[in-house]
Image (cartoon, rainbow over all chains, first blue to last red; front, side, top):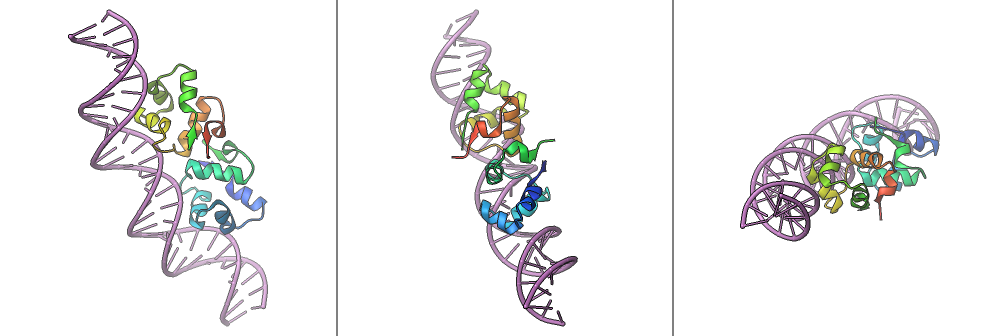
Length: 63
Length: 63
DNA sequence: TAATAATGTAAAAAGTTCTTTACATAGTAT
DNA sequence: ATACTATGTAAAGAACTTTTTACATTATTA
């Protein structure tokens, strides 16, 4: 599944580590999701959307 | 995590089996999610939202 | 040149989601 | 009463997500 996390993260000038801390996950999780190793859980996806003040569907693209 | 799947399903007069088929998962998956045994994957959550013509955040409540 | 920061890879372990199979119960209809 | 429909439980196995630890690479800075 596509996602816009890297784009949104860089748009706010955050490092992977900072985003990880903000979302309460490890840096490895951010790397894996940005690089599409796997999709996040629903819980994490919703946290991401909330953090970036948008909706799950605006960040993750089913395609 | 709370969810409104049962409410939405019944609102459309569907059985668990019919919803399962529409979403391409098993009946057990629907039962488990409705009864909060676990949360769906992001992929399935998005499918559910799309099926009910709404958004992930309108069906699943982080709480 | 050495130290630091940011990103990446790898792999094992623990936890979570989904399927498959089988069976139980309550309600409804015949 | 019997059959059928809808919902539920249980448990094993496969697949997937997250953490932890360790190390590599590139770019920047002291």
